[in-house]
Length: 343
Image 1 (cartoon, rainbow, N blue to C red):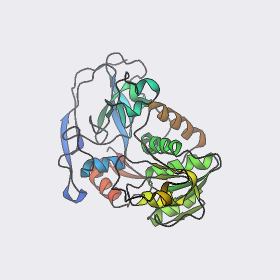
Image 2: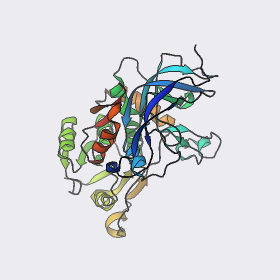
Image 3: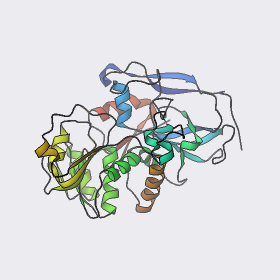
């Protein structure tokens, strides 16, 4: 097993220098030294990195930076190039995945009761440390996922956030067996969550402004696909809001049947209009948020995705066009998930 605790390599990556609208050029190419590996860390040579809407929120300043000039990217698939002291689960050459959740304290009341996603001292890839919009990334072994060796890295990358967060959002929506599920927005995360729900026997209705996304939804087996502000053809038992649009919260709540649950998947949401208790919440309708994920969520979803043969729709971009990928995501020009591939 090869070990490395001293940085000897430099790399190129895209850093968020001055957050702002994509038209202002918040991402810039920079070259920096790869950080020295600490105990329990992996140095991964990136094969592919998914582009998440959270990366867009960081670039545009919807989320305040935690670390100046950080490389975004938290759907990392790569090969282990070196390992730090104490690493036991990975060897050089192994494929490893890095996701959004990067670290937790392990001792607080949330960590010790299966709710590590709520840890007050949690840290995140691409926010608190450099992520995968680069040639190399450092991932803590304890938060790395072992990935199939025989699958295309580009198809694996979106599973590591879009898939995992979609899975947690689906579980938070309390969808009953054979239930009716509405998905508001149909991008990277929603098109994966839809397949899990369909595999489990749900009826899925997709509501999105994108005509191309509606076509993809029908190809994947949705019962209907309409505009985001249209009522679904039947009352919903559960709904998930993937679009970061607060105006859709009352729309989705009105679409719920009695005792239905709306789960909001994003880390950022525009302001929610005033809700009317009788129209939106009465008859035991529920409104839930989703905060990150646990590692158990990740393991469960990755095993389920392999079992059901989940279909990942991707739009690949070379790493050199990371700024274009984020701009396309901002303009809803991406079909499925955007994925960066180092050249």
